[in-house]
Length: 131
Image 1 (cartoon, rainbow, N blue to C red):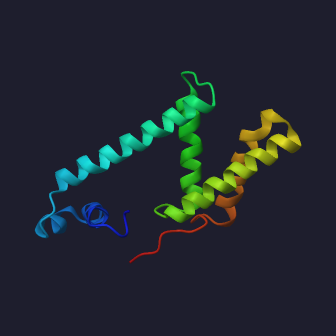
Image 2: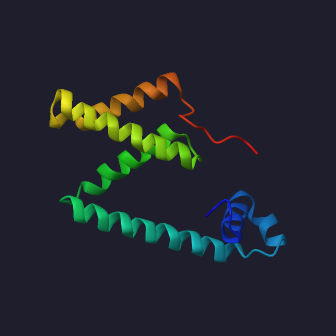
């Protein structure tokens, strides 16, 4: 959607340079509102899916935020494909950690993979290239 639609191009243009986007006839305030709406809707869907598949409690948010941050860093900042690959890699590490070391080690295995990747490839799996 961000690469192939007029709305996506307007959102990307506004995020890159709001003044130039304004010169091209794009209202940056409207684009910020659209981006906030998309992110709120995505977060709402993610919350519903989390609630449907597991139990949650007050500290669940910080745990999910840490995992989401690690996924984005592993994938490479700004790379959607890298983020998807980072999520799959982190999920596999957590599953294998739970299988081989016990259920309490699933988070530890994920953190170890993130730290190892940051040591050997600090830019992430698929970093965003400059245009």
